[in-house]
Image (tube, rainbow over all chains, first blue to last red; front, side, top):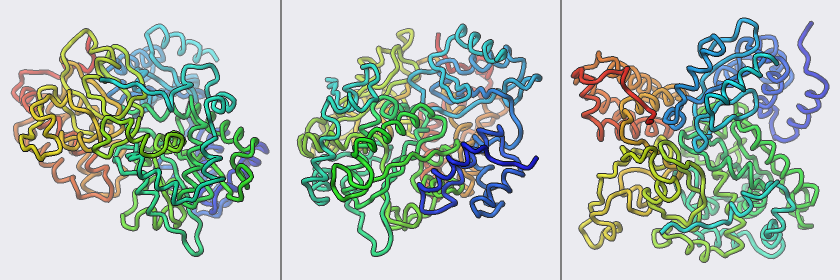
Length: 159
Length: 451
């Protein structure tokens, strides 16, 4: 089936387009809408949005590859990002990542075999005062402890 | 003496502190109304200049002066853009404003738009901060419903629209011209300056880019009056006015964010705010304001014997006992940056700490300029080799040379942002690097955490 944006997201895109003096300015918000729906940005959706916004596909591809939050291949149902940058590392980010890798049975950058969880490291997520931290989907989890991590990941693997 | 204030943070501890009703109960939106109904833009800029608000994003450029650069264009609109890309490692202050006091941002936008002749403000928030974005959108909707923003705020014929725009995970978009490209739907690659944003900014139009905290404090500036606001600061004499948010993180007992009169010392931030160092260890070094600002050691002192020197009053003192301000920090050979201090306790391996930061900078370079793109990778590879015990003394020397050659040779300040911390670590902890080369230390024993 050819790609189409859900009706609700189409309406949102219309609202977004009214915020800017150019159509191309809606590109990054539009890519977020696509990724929210599809989980990643495929060549097909790149082609679709390039037509929708009247932007060259090469430009869209350039944008997708520039920003680290756009997935260029399918990922798991849930996204786990462990902040690894210095302020978190000073408070045990290395142990947090190690615990996640062990519990999920994968390395950073991989997805669990059942497709539930993708684990990645993130660069500073502005939670240095509540380190160590990780982001699960759209939520921050801060002041992590071993028990807290265990609980969060168990819940994630089941849901 | 640490001087706590509570202008931005007055409601931080209250339930649903982000709601309009609470903001209004503490005087919210009275200043935007007063400005729009009774002042000229020249008067607003004049107050802003007197307030000596130095930009809260890191560079410390005077806000009022920046506003005064804006000239109306014959055919083009003007824009206000807020930088809330908060991504400088060690920085965690703007998030608190967006989450806990979003209306101060919206009110600041109204006043700033009026002062610079803009009708649209874009708040550029990094995508990961979902709660911040939701709170800002919530505040915008509430203000719209009340008629505080929109076609005629407070009944005055001066349209103000405020929008939140999101990035997609790129530290470089905190650089103002990269941010503008990102706002325009492009790769976040910094632009050559000049032209500066005040001439050619967002969508080719005159634009002021301010840090989010800078704009959030504007209602306070107008409420107190520029001069009175500036005098709250311990560094009023250095033209570094008012109050701002400070953060403490890393190896301290109680990390967090606090609002203070400008000019606390590092020791006050670490001991009075941060509760002291974990395990009561000694301090190895501190990063004063985000990872791009060079480290300071407690053993460093101010050398200003000349009575005419602006730092003479602090001659002979430890840099940890000197008020931190935009200009005083510069005299200490570092930068004030974002005012969020990262503390490294004794026992931390500075080589591993630098390696961690170089990973960050290598990952985040936009890749436009050769010195930054190649230099960042080269620095990381070299530190990696040294940590692995395969480094030579030449490698240690090379680190300084590579970093030095990045300085001033790139389109934006990211090159310096990578080189300055590198030079700080190599210059101040050279013996640690050499110990790895001589085989006296092993990577397996290197730690970033302290018990």
